Image 1 (cartoon, rainbow, N blue to C red):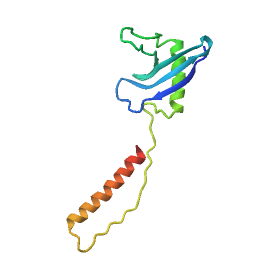
Image 2: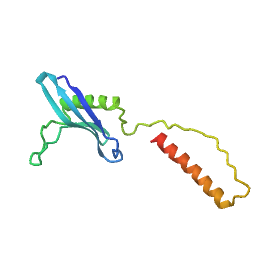
Image 3: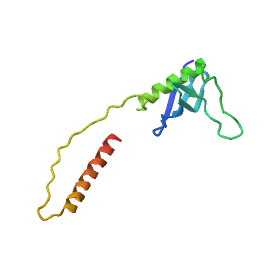
Image 4: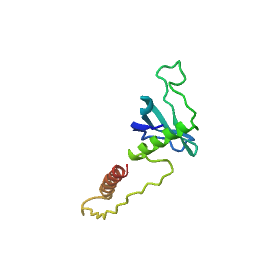
Length: 139
């Protein structure tokens, strides 16, 4: 069965240190049966990745659609969602991200009439700006 991912919402604040974490929600189309499923979840479950069916909008039903998360259909949905997740910039847990390191030479000078307190405050302001810039670049 052909599965097309029509949209994906990457979760940026995932808790990857947990046993279970939702990485993204995606919409899939099944053109052979002219059906679209909105809100399928791509999740990390232990060391595995699984595709979970969408939840129902009302609280009375357990799920809008159900499937075996270890079945062929679920694996096909998972593969499609993982491909879209990676293309949209999603990072899989455990992948090392290169850290951009910049070395910026710094030169400090203190006016002769300045006391030590002013020198320390000036240095703290300079380091704070560098820290904020590093945080902005490294995200």
